[in-house]
Image (tube, rainbow, N blue to C red):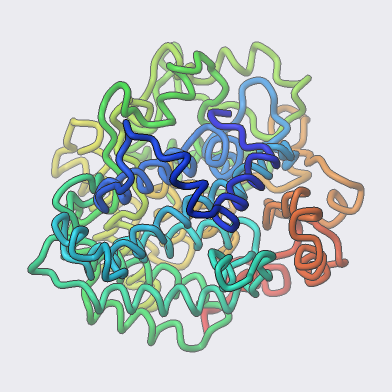
Length: 526
């Protein structure tokens, strides 16, 4: 992993914030570095670190992208089968909270009268605060959709004596995130810049930050569509205030080249490893092939997706995905040698300057389609937008005829499955959201579930305790809480674990918005 944060280091950071005195600060002042960092640089650093850690070979590569069955590991398949390395889980849990603290600092320097006037030189104070709130909401949504109930309302309140933050219920976290996004959108002045520099998502464009706030609000509301009868009201408010209107509004972090490279690129060409490739289930979806091993049909059999040649490269002229979720000892050279070798023939998504999408315009269209009862117009607009976006990323635009032919092929029956499956295809490389949508909807049904055949007679068998294995009949519902929490925040950790199924720290307890286990795939929205 690129950064190892030990328990001792984390405790020292907390101590430095809590107990440092003025004499100590004066003694440790570095005359060669600025004591005050411009707010746009604070935001830029926080933004980049967030992207680096969420979209990398570990949190995304060995967790979200493999849970979503976009990627499979070519050698060591333990994470594909839900055996997470505990040190990785510990580190990301705490790293994400340090990133939240970074965005809080942007808010603080734009709120504090002693620093606000200086910060205003780098963008309107209110707009900077709003952008930081939006990024916080996005990151917290990733965190709560990973672990479930997490510390939230008492985080960052050491000065108020909150040394051991409680775990808030996920439903309450969602309600507050939507509230925060509403407030952030309302405080933005579209006629003033958010930042004069350093913003690698929207280049300081406040109007686009406002659209992102409302689009993200609509996404979170849709997540709750199985449990909250007011979800449509929330989306209606977001639409009225302005959401994404075209691919120009896509929220994507724009990396540069070396040394500002994307961390997906780093996983292969800086770390010099060749750990991942596209899975057979996802490859079959893109090729329009049914899963004959498990008697699963394809809704658009025979329709080859134009994004196939963008998302991956062929091997010896053929597109064959790697078997998913088989034991490491069964991952023989024949399987690896048939699947794409991205180290020698990388797709555009592994470019050093690949712009990682947090949310696309196509996703917004699919959200509106479901909001309207799976409307055909927004569905088709979403497919067209996705084709245009990804072909633009690839630098080779599809012809109007190619787009029309594919849209026609996949629009014969616009229903819950069609919308969910096309959203899944568009969400490629955004494993955090794809994993959430798979859990929420139950689609794609073409993905492998535990006990189903992966290749030959080898089944997708998961790892874990006997109870984990017995209880897990679907893709993993959550990541277990990191074990470090049992000592660093023991009482609150134990209280959170008691709320999980069986009162154990397991990965089969569903999120509050996941109602599939009793109602089947994609139960009706409220």
